Every structure is written in C-alpha cells, then in structure tokens.
Image (cartoon, rainbow, N blue to C red; front, side):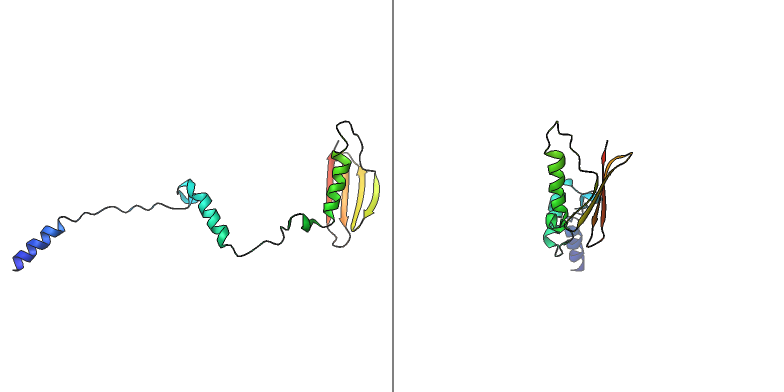
Length: 126
C-alpha cells in the first residue's frame, strides 16, 4: 500500500510544471510600458482630493488683469507701423502705481501694488 502511494505521488509530481516569475513594473518611470502613463496620470488626478487655490486663473490676478489689457492696447493694437510707447513718468491706476523710464536695457516699467506691496518690473528691450 505504501509503495503504491509512493509511486502514485511520484507519478503525479512528475507532471507538475514550474515557471519562472518575472516582475514587470507598471509605472513607465521605472521601466514599465509607456502607454500606461496616461492611465496612471488620469487615475491619480481622479483620486486627488486637493485643489490649488493659488492657481485661480485670471481672477487671482486682480488689478493686473486690467494692466494686461492696458499693455495690449498700448503695444499690440498699434499695428505694424505703430511706434507709441507708454509715457515716461509715474501714474496710479486703482491699487497699482506705475513708474516708466528709459534705461540702457530698454524701456523699464515698474509696477507696485499699493495694497500688498508686491512689485513687478517689465523691461522692453530697445
């Protein structure tokens, strides 16, 4: 009886097949398939519960959005032959204080937000 069980066990075990396990990463940053990138990014964005309020778009610009339209009117809407530049000197528009002057680098526009104290400098080369 023991011999038949032993022969049966050896006969069954000889038919078992083993295989080598190979790890393949999913993330393309670690050698995975590059087509998984969009799926992983969309999955991460769908699970993200946080929003960055500092990226509020044009509403976050406040008074600078009106300044943007003013610059567009002065520089880009003049046409190809327009040579008008902002007037040299200081001016105030709402919460923004402008200072325009010529320098060796070109036309310099300093913008100061009076309420927050933030400063911006724009240099238009000669």
